[in-house]
Length: 149
Image (cartoon, rainbow, N blue to C red; front, side, top):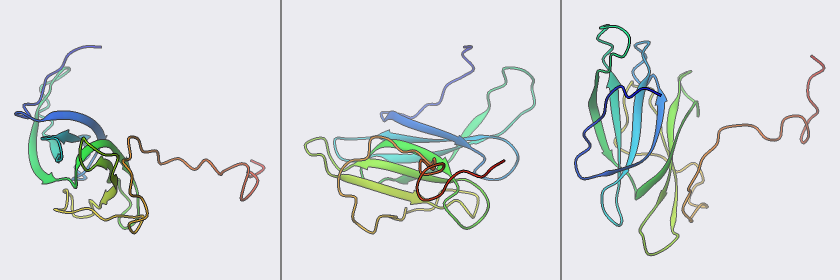
């Protein structure tokens, strides 16, 4: 590994990140989740400015910061509907003294992070979500057999 650069996130602790092209300019951006207190966190969209200086160039700028519903524990980039591009899902914990939390999806159809996420569980996930995965683990077994290809 080669150190290429760093982000200044102030007094917040980065807890997780995901890389995807949020603004569809062809360059991979970074979305980070943070913990800013014992009961809060943020999501930050860091745009890849691609200054084309050459190998090792590292030019990102923070374009948007939104409050998360709690301490961000996990961040995932995957297509959850709408435009054919990756959205951002987070798992969070509401505070350090309990296991309460949930999941929230931030649809990036307009090329940035929206101010609020949507709970895809409709309130049924009430515990903290320390990790997320977007794979289909049912393929090849139930509900159907794999294709013969």
